[in-house]
Amino acid sequence: MREVLLVRYGEVFLKGANRPHFLKVLTDNVKKAVKPIGGHVWMSDSRIYVSDFEDLNECIRRVTKVFGIYSVSPAVEMEKDLDAIANQCVEMMRGFSGSFKVFARRSDKHFPLNSLELGAELGGRVLDSNPNLTVDVHHPQHRLSVEIRDNAYLCVEEIKAVGGMPMGTGGKAALLLSGGIDSPVAGYSLMKRGVRCCAIHFQSPPYTGELAKDKVLQLAGKLAEYSGGIRVYMVPFTHCQLEIHEKCPDGLGTLITRRFMMRIAEQIAKQFGAQALITGESLGQVASQTMEALTCTDAVVSMPVFRPLIGMDKTEIMAIAEQIDTYETSILPYEDCCTVFTPRHPVTKPKLHTMPDAERKLDIEALVREAVENTEVVQI
Ligand code: ATP
Ligand code: MG
Image (tube, rainbow, N blue to C red):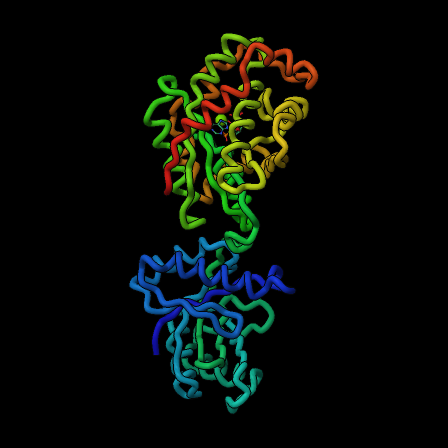
């Protein structure tokens, strides 16, 4: 008899020809997640199991962050002996009160009792041993699950995991990661759909400092907990910003800055092998996020730009930031390159056809090239 972690994955994405590939990626990702704590991982009968971990809680913490995993249960793995199983059921339900139901499932048809008989037998024995319990087959408070497979697996507790699609099965994209609340959430949303992301951050020293840089690396580190690592591109952006500030109409400063970010990001994204860009914009949140402004931003790149937060309120975004533990880092008060040269009266309804004229004094190609060439790569 030993303690294992029983791991459940979603079935939806597992139909069709991709199934073996997705399962292999998913199992490998669980292996990677528990490797530092020495867990042994295997798959059998449409379940993943983990054993030989040092610390159950740490194992749960790690596995519940693997995209594609829907829930986990600490379980007892034991021999398929009815009396031994019954005794263990009694043991596991000892501290409980309220209603319960036994969910028995016999996959091994050699086991003498079928699923129904086994459920009834075990339920009866547990009931006899614990007067604080009653049976409720429709809405039980506690679910004692007993699965008869190559071994018997018993568990009571089920802990929800992140869900989503296995990391790496959704292609690659480049996340424009600021130090704010929104962009880490935007990255998380796509990562959850199996997209492997790199992060691109624009910094403007000396206007932005080391603390701002550390903050972004810290945020990237939080995202890396879900992806098993992330590459961060640190783009020197000061020259672009000074040029824009000096040579472009003030009211369009932020928008032109955003257009440069997109141009540079697209180049870096190609180096990474990404097919799309991701930003944390939400419609109407600020002047640069109106429909007209977003049209002007998108016009400079040919890659699709994913904005998973476009229809979300700030409070909804903040709730996810809390949940994925980026919020506390995001609200640290360090300057972002965007706040350095904010125009006093930004244009909220810019016209796309006026943009080339507004940018005509800039050597766009040279500025983009310079920024890309001097970009620093940090692997987390
Ligand atoms: P966030 O909370 O993500 O910073 P925001 O509401 O402050 O978003 P903006 O500052 O207008 O909005 O930025 C919009 C998006 O542009 C961000 O979500 C992010 O994807 C990208 N972005 C902004 N500043 C930077 C930066 N310094 N480096 C990388 N990406 C950035
Ligand atoms: Mg911001």
